Length: 562
Image (cartoon, rainbow, N blue to C red):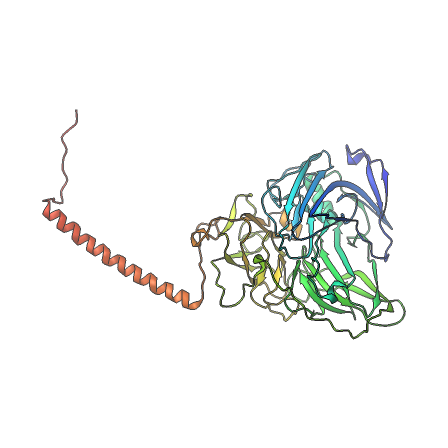
């Protein structure tokens, strides 16, 4: 992208200068974002949220982005690193209107590291009380665990009410936790590696959000209803050698629509979802299902053909009855001369030798959750509700989960909503309906949507941290409109399990296997019988005592006082 500086138009208020970025031409070679890489166990970097004008063929728009680019710089760390991010808000007044569960305060921001298993408390991944106003800054401090799962994550703004006009309008960065030396198989280690940030700018939605929030910055003049960019380019081309396997890390950083990707005649094997490796690589799939916020890591190989054969990677119409997917081309893979390896080289099965405690397998009858709650999405009195409630504040907790426990959540409404959970990823307990091999029992996610099955039973381990857990729909317009909630991980043991804390009753469900539940019922009956016997004995003792002491059942009138 070319970059220059222009004076701002009067409508943009007090901003002194505005960066102008030339969008790459349609079909250009896939761009790569600049990389900010850790050294010696530390990365200290700066993200500046700035107004920037982007211009291209028949289009021009002013939006908010990191460091004057779409996407922002790629952040690369290793397990065990310390990541310091100085978030500088270069936006200015007016701050815009303030509203409850609607678009608001377009120039107020903060930062979320999507998918990272890091502390949910400030100065780390805290998104409710950390507020960075115009011309302010905040220092974020993330300690990446030494056993953190390597994979692709991302960073984006998360101030309630302004996520659409910021994160949904281009402000996002890929975040890679790199594979440590010797972690991968030799075959995976030598694969060419590509990060692809998939972003869309739905101009009508962005204009609506700008108008309702009092935003005087965002503006566009584009005939397109919805502009899709891959690494900041429209329908770019990834050039590869035919017959060679390449690793593609896809980040669905779009604001609303979900993607149902087809790779044409190229072979596709699933390697990881949401930054967590699957157990049965190579799992060959026909389609990649990416909700807003979701990620997929793939091994892709395209066949021989005519010279410079292009394979379109296209999002198809939804196969299910839930929310519609985006339909259209996103990028292409161009096969050039064959690679050195034979076309029929097989992918070698691989899985991590060990997993951290927060990713230990929770499936099967041997694991019984200590706490179980339900999380209906958009199924209450409002289509923007979580657990039947619109957002009521950062301390209006929906559920309480005990610490250091295996807990279970039953989610519904996920054929229409993209469920995202901060801090603690969750594991599918059942293979969903629809026979889509992209989803299997035992897979891990932090963002989940399936138009073929509206329900999912998931489990996660509340280890390593305590504090607020954020859950929300990652269709950002829904989140800004109140489809977000806070939960709390606190306390230990069964008494710390409480569901629907905002409802009329506190429902606590302790789940176990069938024999355990039967034993609990027998023990409950025996305990009740023992209490009745004890009460009868106590009454006999009291009567005998009353008779021995000459106490009769009558009132005694005391003498009047002085």
